[in-house]
Length: 182
Image (cartoon, rainbow, N blue to C red):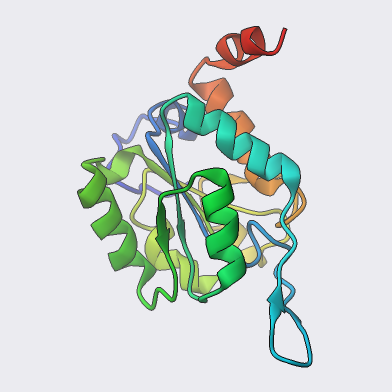
């Protein structure tokens, strides 16, 4: 386990999950399965999992901000973010570490209270700065070895929802959510 975001040495990843106020997600390989679908005319199609979207709405309802930082620019990402009410979207990020620092500063949230999910080496500058670094089940082994928590599910197949469920559990908020759906 790494010591990201300056947590105390005795804190567990679950303790850090309980303190999360901002969740930052990569897109390709995290919110999608990582494959790029391009038409002959150059249009890009992405497939997002509906349970990830519902999880994002659940965690937002608990007061946790959700943001996207991705290295690619895509109208599909902008559309999905708008559909989910994600207000902070950084497209075409060349330095994800700087991007997450600027976002945390903008939102006045200490990096120790930020969770991030990425799936490849371009995400390490972001993951190495936050309090809770996470990845997907199908990330390369060197990525899985460098984060605090690995989703049991692959990118694009509910990995984000699995993380959100874990955050909700750590924050003791399931009773609140389930009472809304009884």
